Length: 104
Image 1 (tube, rainbow, N blue to C red):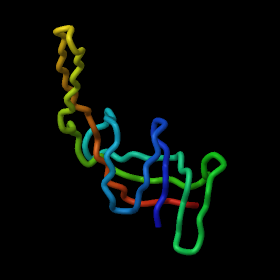
Image 2: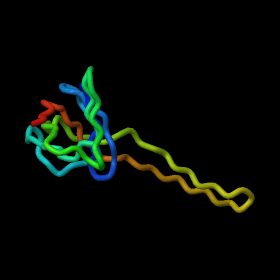
Image 3: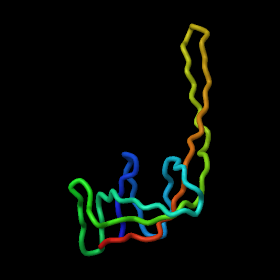
Image 4: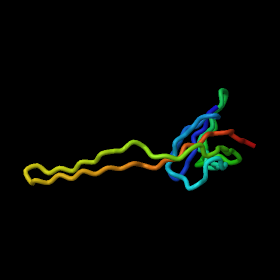
């Protein structure tokens, strides 16, 4: 069984027991989180599709860890103008462990 859920205008596919990487959430490690915007639920026999979201279906998870991704290098360069600019960026993330999928 898997679900596709919506979190801050991004869609994620999740199964029970899976660890999912989301953009940074300001929640402490170990705290529970509940996702209510479920777009799709797929079982082995049936598929439920929301219009736009499914009601009475939730995902319960807990915050697993916080961290930062690898550095991305951005280079701006203009030929023959003696212009070159280097920049870097490290994105903050939060890993969430999916505990269970609740549907009533």
